Image (tube, rainbow over all chains, first blue to last red; front, side):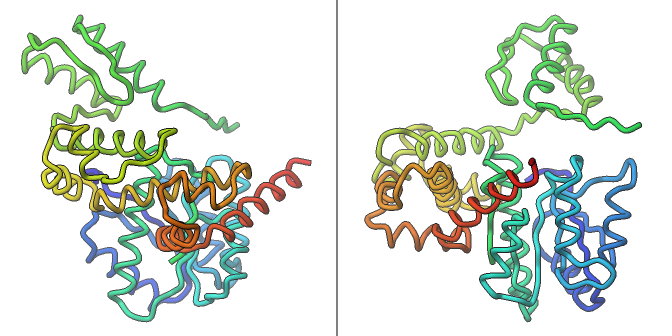
Length: 148
Length: 187
């Protein structure tokens, strides 16, 4: 792993979830820098500013007010400068149909929100490690699908 | 007006490194991705000078032997997984033979640098090869399982699922639908 932090962006409207997430990233052994936005509108405003540090991976909550995760995903995939950001959807839904639909729309990772902290830490660590392989080991990003 | 640039980082890297080395009049061989061989006679201060010049482009000289070894292990694994021949029976024997190092050493260095294990990396690469073969739509799952050295389709499917979280069938369906979608978008 590099000396530079891995840039992570999180969009979630739930305050508890945001905290949960932030703490999990602080505790895993991989060096990360986490930026957090509170909903889809804020997310798109952030990503379309000039001169920002684009994230290597975006964690996107599906159910958000104002603009939901799927709408954000579709918008991001249409924007040339954003479409290569890895997108990890996370949601309370674990229906295969929902999972497949988000993959078809271009998501790379699907995370079923775990209820306990240690599982979340484990999952995030796994996602970051796999994502790192896609960035450094010349894997074909078109085939980057991971469901946890 | 905004212009978006598409670029090949490998070509950019090679060009920058070559220009800087030429300026310093160092003799070198560009060995491929991010690896150069320079004359042993080059002094430490010259290397420092080169590093300072490259730093302006966000490039660093990694003298770390361990990182270099990890890259070689990865290359050997990729070569192994993508070879036309059937995979070797023992991964550890293959790697230690290829890299002329004890497997225990390779394994501990790999884990230290990448936070994942050689075994996991091989599983990931095999799943990737599986994905690639599936997405060509030219092979049956039985043929793919055989190519990747699995004893049965069930074994292949289980391992694919444990690495990616989805079944080979679901993967195939998702990729197909994505392609249909992108064709519709282009029309």
